[in-house]
Length: 526
Image (cartoon, rainbow, N blue to C red; front, side):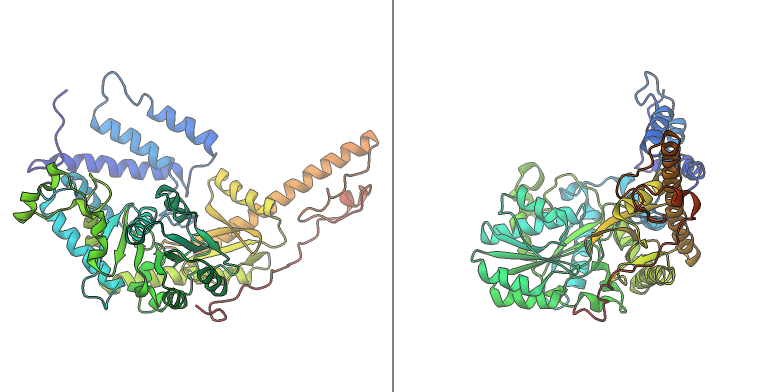
């Protein structure tokens, strides 16, 4: 076998072009085979099918580049949960823009490593300019804001706690019960005290409870607020939290991994009022920024706040090299080797501009509100609340939590839809996290039809199983039913021992029992 060609250098593009064509064909073929948002059958079907298609992964003799690409990429695409499908809406897992993915290909081909200037001359300059520009969006009134690129919100939150620890020692973190799990994990990794959890009974951090916690605690304090929770997408009252932090001498970190890009929308940026008062901010553009993962940032109001990240390794940032003018990149991350993720972000921002990105954001949020409208008009579905960003919680009317969970898993098993799950107001809800700006009203209606049809199927199956069981009891002469067995969605309740009613009466139509309405954005101080 001849020596395989490289991706870089003058001959790299010619070597890549036919391989890219093979990849694109395989992506198309895999999506066609899948035929929906994810493959049907669940893990018991997908895992053996994938293993059969890709075996052996390490053959004695290679199959050649085109065969390997065609085989594995087709298998991966056929078995993917594709966020570009309008019914794949479970998580903060965005469908990346084609131009961002294309830029990522260039980054992979050139392969700059962002740990020393001599590995990434242009990429280091681009990253420095991009992080400064994005930090200025968050902190427009400070003279020297800056940011570092991270693998996502988890790493950014960990860096925020690390920097607070380096400033103040074993800082005590205070956060709402709505905070991202990475904050607790970061405190554990850094040897900090376990965070003090403040109630968030309406989905956002309770200000009175925060005030009380800040009053009672007497060590250096770091409050973590959230601009876009992962369960409901709600935004804490940032400005009021910043006021309390100022009053009590606490620092403030805001996890805006989800909601941060709202800054680019003149229509929605007011939701982030107070963001610039934080000592650090997490931003994640592989969520509401449509970037391939990863594309996170941690921003600070002053560049010198990042000084504790400095690290010295003579083979990467020797003192005499630095004194001679070579930029020192090790202080830009806790990682050593890392990809030039700035490129795809910069390409996207330059291609779309402020107005183009704002249009994508506004369209996506409008889609979420349209879904909420459709749920409200459907008597068989309950809506948790109007969406703050693009997360919509809903559930079949009258269903218990077990039924809600089963509906979600059934949709996954059938390959029809990928929905998330969230607990709110003491109940389990289906979660639709809408991040696809190409989703149409018809896509949304079809998604709701899938939910209601699946719920009806489950009720029918449950009723049929119950009737089958009670018929067998009649034949054997045991007619008493265990207490509670008839309290199922879509069945007529009957006292224990009454079997004939189940056999002669049709299932009752579930009565709409909407929960007490959750406060809407207009009713709740933000």
